[in-house]
Length: 305
Image (cartoon, rainbow, N blue to C red; front, side, top):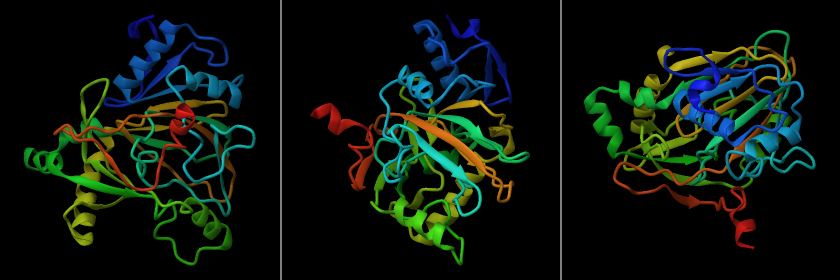
């Protein structure tokens, strides 16, 4: 099955497509999997509505068709008896991912992609936004592109989703303590070359702590400038979830933002991530871990043993 043979509906001009007519809980042919992968690379995030037959085991099995899986998270606990699944149960006293980020960029090998399944949703609200970091790079004026090409950024989990929140309650404090139980710090190129498409994309988002060689204040100002291109409306798509929906995004070419507009209503989603490679900058240099070892997260220790 070629990309053109998928029943595919683009959702926005620069990012996002819905793939119709597939049941992810049933075995899919290798050709279909390859067509989905091609759609992922082209559209950056693809969606599958109403996958009510898909459970966590089926989600794991579907994700494995695209490569080996990471553990659920470098520091957060997995779903019981499902070490590959991160169970994100938001609502009262749970941290929300309501800031722009690319998943797990604080390790040297961020995931290739993430597959998210809606398990429980509020009556209204709780949409997710995705942004295309390839077109964001292409939008930069030539002088800013030249600057981005030369920069390296330090990413860390030393601050998490609740950065900037004051008077944290005990549940938030406990979550933050677990999230930061092992500190990771990684040096990434600000512009990476996509290993499949060859496109140039920005590697930024909420885990960036500073740019190498620049002060904290300079880094904050510059990050705000670059991020303004990522989050331009023309580079984004918004998904209104229904129970059973699945989103699959290319973590090498996107950022996302979970909108926290549902108060204390429960919102529960489950995520599985696919092992990625070392980002490569325009000069051929690769990302480098400064603190923390991600081998266990990426299954490399198991592969060696």
